[in-house]
Length: 216
Image (cartoon, rainbow, N blue to C red; front, top):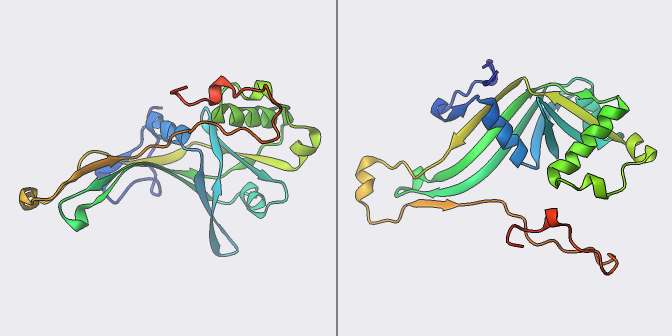
């Protein structure tokens, strides 16, 4: 399906013109973002915690320590709400109250399960490194048994989601367009700077090509 089925909790109510339910758009937001926020309730207390997520097909993965409280709560079947926001720019209007931001955000609802199959777990961890830097997995030491034991991987099916988007110039009140005030957009973007080598790196080991900035 090209669109997510709208549910009561995934339907955007405020500013519905900014809503998007297209899978491709939501997947693009999830793939570009490296960190998301996961909310859940435990013992009547709401919690929001940052996670490093990655997507494989129609599934979203995240990981954590086997001893971690949040992971134990999530794998026990807690209802989760995962939120991602990409900030694309600042919007400067002619009036104070019409300033804003250009953004792409996505919200995912559902429950996660523990990945227990070792082959699936290893494949998920490989997908994480390849998401961060394609080609990295082939160069590094894979996880050993001890590392696999102390790490849990959770998977959350992408079944219920929506996005909210804003782009373009400010939307001022008509009478304010005559004001002698600069208005427009200041684009923002996330970029990778030149890598900084570990001080203990032996001489002669060059920065991999996949980690170098686009300008070389």
